Image 1 (cartoon, helix red, strand yellow):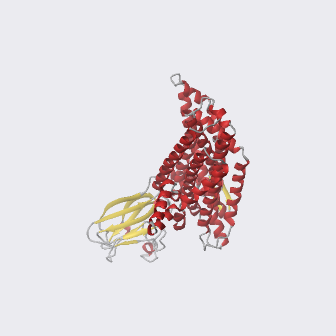
Image 2: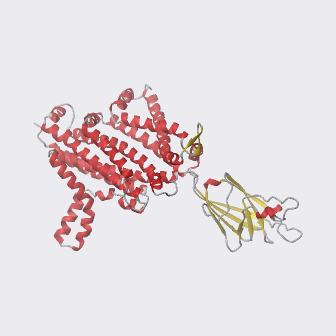
Image 3: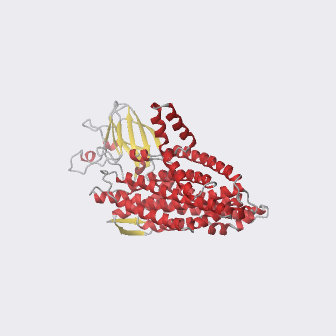
Length: 532
């Protein structure tokens, strides 16, 4: 049990519970910050909307803002965000050092190397010719100890450096006792000294702040004492707070911007979204996904300590397949069946063009998929944060720390983002197919494209040494079909390698381009479709 000091006092919390909840609390704080940021931005927009110089359409959008939040995907997302924000407030009772973590937000930009240089005069000697540590030189450092990762000490003279000031021994004690009891770094003129955090052979620094280093110059000449501090934020994990805040605010603002700029398209999207979440399949996908994710946590994978990698890989595949089923079903029901049932003819008899109809259907399917990914992705993040604790308790290993739980949780996010991009590509392809073919054919073609898109790079590589006709068809498939292997991070999970933001950016660009091509094909196929 740990006596955890939260923002509201000290309570007794089990170690494993505090380690598990701390990463989730950081998500909650980020969500709370995002809601506050969103409220400020919407307040500014509302103030502009009340101005008499604001355009009429802008004032109308501000008046309809509460309705826009309540009737679409923003409403369930808002409740999820409020729940996370609530935990961001009261979860501080169960986490470690919440105040210090929040203060660490102001030190996120502290990273890199800090060079310092001092001139240290020769230290006087006593009657016996030894260095008199009572006259050592104090050089100011004034840096939080928790942020110092490494310290390189260099000099052109032999030095004795200590983070503690020399205390002369009391009368009757050995003369050198005061110097022997404190940590000392020995810096040679021909060999620098390197202090590293976590190195058991390195003397400890003061727990709170390194104010000064006390230097004794053993040489006869003044010493040029150079110190290079390698620093990093004490709580680097808190950077998830501003990232989460921006993501929350951006999701709401993007939805409202699309609704304001393209009202007809948004009306089709809203009707599609409402229709899909009312389908039993939506509830089945959510319940089945949550149940399977819970089971995955406790399955014995027999991977010799690598169970969490199997959990991530299995969860990504599960969520993507469930969302693909939902996307194909939604595209077929909302386009193919509406065309067959003459519902599309009724809709298009109003002032709605065919491009708005197709793009609106895709947008509504995308909002449905986004809600599914938010729910299942949040459940997965919570379970991944618990998985190191469960594995440590099952194998009788050392208790997993909260920063390890946070690391595993954060490493899961790129996989969810890439999986969502892959689902969007397949949803766009499914929309194009549904403009001409019914549900069963859509399922067969979409899942065939899903399989071929994931193995196309392998086919191209394997066909290099085969007949030309085989190589031609492999290249043709690679050109026409989406390269879904680009959204697969199984290799990164196996190697425990972080996915760089640049890769996510290129993947997002590829996703947007291929979705654009697929939707353009959908428009061409739907343009001359006889709806009567």
